[in-house]
Amino acid sequence: MNKPITAIVIALGSAGDVHPNVGLALALRRRGHRVIFLAGSVFRPMAERAGLEFIGLGSDEEYYEAVRDPDIWHPYRAFFVVARRLILRWLRPLYEIIEGLMEPGRTVITAPGTAFAARIAQEKLGVPLATIHLQPIMLRSTIDPGCYGFPDIINHLPRPLRSFYLRAVDRFLIERLLAAETNAFRAEHGLPPVRRIWDRWIHSPQLIVGLFPEWFAPSQPDWPPNVHLAGFPLWDESDHRAPPPELEEFLAAGEPPIVFTAGSAMAQGRDFFRVSAEVCRASGRRGLFLTQFPEQLPQPLPAIVGHFSYIPFSEVLPRAAAFVHHGGIGTTAQALAAGVPQLVVPLAHDQPDNAVRVRRLGAGDFLLPRAYKRNTVLERLSHLLQSPDVLETCRRRAADVVAGHGLDEACSLIEDLCVSDQSR
Image (cartoon, rainbow, N blue to C red; front, side, top):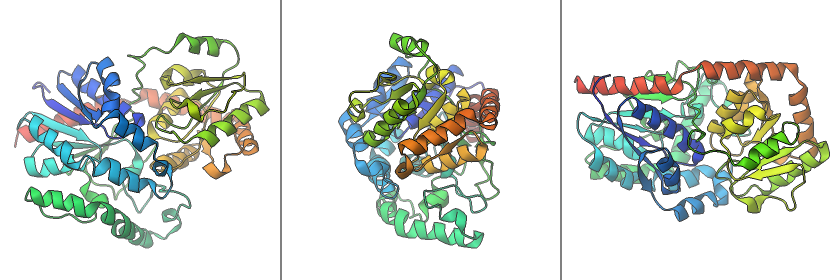
């Protein structure tokens, strides 16, 4: 594509949602386009290190208030938090920002399905929109459904009942939380009401990009026809944020550690880190704990355990023996890229689905939080570390990730969308 465009790249959520979109923004900029990056204000330092033109959403205090809400990790109540603090909170502000930034014929938006303002701007303002899905669970299927949680109800139903189940979820959960405010906002802009918001409306009718590979989540015949899978993006700040020297000292001081994290936004992980410390102490294996909320950690930590607030995964996972984590898609992708066996402890959101896919691939296993006990974890880790099949699968999948071209393919698709819009 010869003509530069202005790309408004929107990222809502925690670091696992923001990092891949920073990678996309940088890839678009390298191809000569102007990029305006929108995310929570707490990510301003990261965006500035990357040299991005940045518009912050909300305050740091608002972000940390959200991540400290215990319901955000509850398997059933988490969606209520997402609806209130993420989707509806940014409906009007995001729309007004987009309206002020867009230049007809030159602007494109990339946004997650949770950015309802972007979808409404596409309808009302005519701005091209590429919906960016980091997680396969955002694409519904009754042929091969994702896992929405445990018990995994939908996958135990006959296919005709799966459609009924999703309609019931829409009617009694999603519509009750989102429809009234969304449709009131649409009415302000002369747009008709929408129903079954999560079924099809959240996806752009122009372009949907899945930033995950076909082998991780195969395309389904009942997905929207404009879905294109581009592969994992794998951006993790390693180009702009050097690891602390203490990391190299720790890694060089002994055998490869087991890395433990409950996620960048997890502030209620005391039980996870307590059990993880017990696992290291009982097994004699070194551990490396990653969390920006050190108050979660047991004190004192075993001498064989190190703690860091944040390390780019690409700097540490290739030198790890195993990786125990929450199952966010960005974290899962980095583990696959590093070829390290994974033990996933999923809580909510996309995590159960990613955990099931890791097990299905043979690249690891998962435990539900209530089963995350010392002896059970020791048993699962021992199997993963000693299984030739798991280690070989991890090696092969790491090669598959490296062979992918997620960001390049996504950029080409976005550019083609602009060409199509300009030719109309």
